[in-house]
Amino acid sequence: MGEGVAKGATETRRVTRLIRLPEVQHRVGLGRSTIYRWMAEGKFPKPVQLGGYSVAWAEDEIEGWIANRLN
Image 1 (tube, helix red, strand yellow):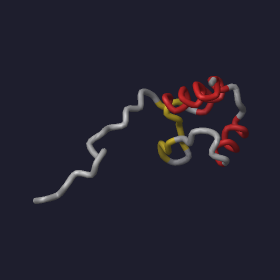
Image 2 (cartoon, rainbow, N blue to C red):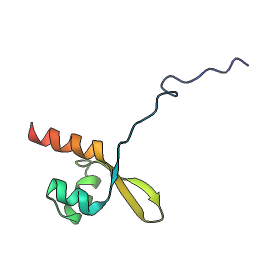
Image 3 (tube, rainbow, N blue to C red):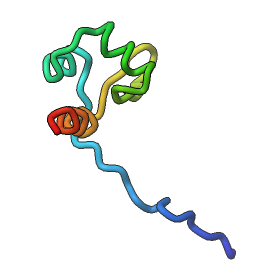
Image 4 (cartoon, rainbow, N blue to C red):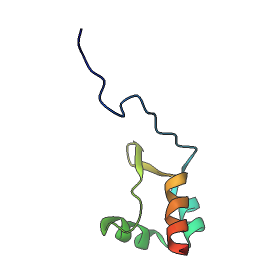
């Protein structure tokens, strides 16, 4: 009844894969403390909460971060 759909509400974000910290560390060549410090400084992508204390990063965000560092 006259309800509008917010722009972008129908778009779905496609995450190909979620990767855990050991794989992130392997891919970027950084230690855990550096990753978390850079996250706090806004220099590294933040993870998504999986539940409890479990987190993982979107693979495409990590790949994008690596690509930006190479330029």
